[in-house]
Image 1: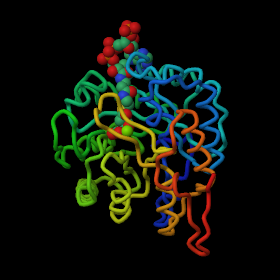
Image 2 (image 1 turned 180 degrees about the vertical axis):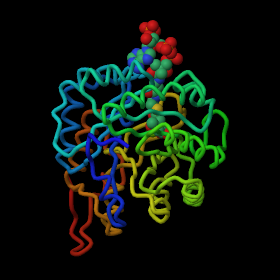
Image 3 (image 1 turned 120 degrees about the horizontal axis):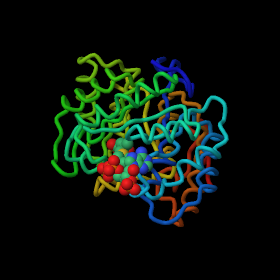
Image 4 (image 1 turned 180 degrees about the horizontal axis):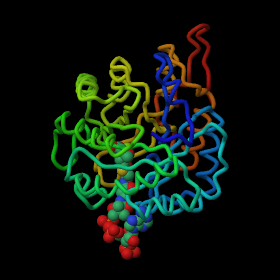
Length: 321
Ligand code: HMG
Ligand code: MG
C-alpha cells in the first residue's frame, strides 16, 4: 500500500468517521459542454478545500477527444495550489495518462474499469480483462512513487447497455484491482439504479470474498433518488467512504441517462444528522455549490442547496445564500 497524498484513511476506520470523497471537479464537470475555464475550476477546488473537503478528484488525464471539458488537466494540475492534508487524485486510463499525470505533479490516481464489458468497451475502448492488463504497469509505477491509488468498478449494479449486473461480478473485478495493488476499490452505481438492499448484498459479498471494509468506497449517482438511502445501507454495512459532487453535478458521456452524483451538501446534511464526523462544513459546501451553479448558469437544484441546512439543536436555518 502506498502513502502520499495523505488523507484521513486511518481515522476512517473508526466507526464514526466518514471520508467524503469529492468528485465534483472531475465527474461533476466532465459531461458539461459549455466552456469552463481552468481559473474557474481552480476557484471551485479552492472553495472545496476551504470547506474542509480532504479528498478531491481534481481532473482526468484521458483523451481530450473523449472528454473535451477536462482537456486542461495538465495546466490545471500544474497551477493547482496544494492545500496541506488534501489529496487530489486524478483519473488515469493508461500509461500515457500516468506519464502526463506524473509530469504535471499529481501524487494520487484512480484507474477505472467496470463490471460490464459493454461499458468498458465504450468508455475506454477495451474489455475488463484488457483494462486490468493496462492498469498493471500504471499501478506499478504509481506504487513505486508511493502514490495513493484507487480503482473504480463502474456499472456495479447495472449497465446502460446490458442491464442487470450480478454483484459477484462486481466483487470479482474489485478483488482483481486490489490484487493489482490499489489502496481502495470504489463501486460505482454509474446509472443510478441501485436500491439499499442491493448495496447491502454487494457489501456483504465483497467482505465475504475478503475485501476489507476500510478499503471499500461507494459512488452513487442519484438518477432515481436512491443515493442517500444507498449511503445509509453502506454505512450499516460498515463502509466509511462515499463519493459526492458539490452542486449535484455529474454524468458520464458513455452512460446515457446517468444523472448527477449524490450532492455533497445532501451527504453532509445526512451525516451531520446521523452524528458522523467528516470535517466538512455545510455552509462552506453550499457556498461552493452556489459557485458551481453560477458558473454553469443553472439554478442550484439539490435538496439542501434549495432548502438550506437546519440546526437540529435550535431549529435555526443554516447555510442560506
Ligand atoms: P481509444 O481511442 O480507444 O484508444 O481511446 P487509442 O489508444 O487509440 O487513443 C486514441 C487517441 O487518444 C490517440 O490520439 C491517443 O494518443 C490519445 P490521436 O492519435 O487520435 O490524436 N490518448 C490519450 N490522450 C490523452 N491522454 C491519454 C491518452 N490515451 C490515449 N491518457 C482512451 C482510449 C482510454 C484514451 C479513451 O477511450 C478515453 O480517454 N476514455 C476516457 C473516458 C472517460 O474519461 N470516461 C469518464 C470517466 S469514467 C466515469 O465517469 C465513471 C465513474 O465516475 C464511476 C461511476 O460513475 O461508476 C469513475
Ligand atoms: Mg460517476
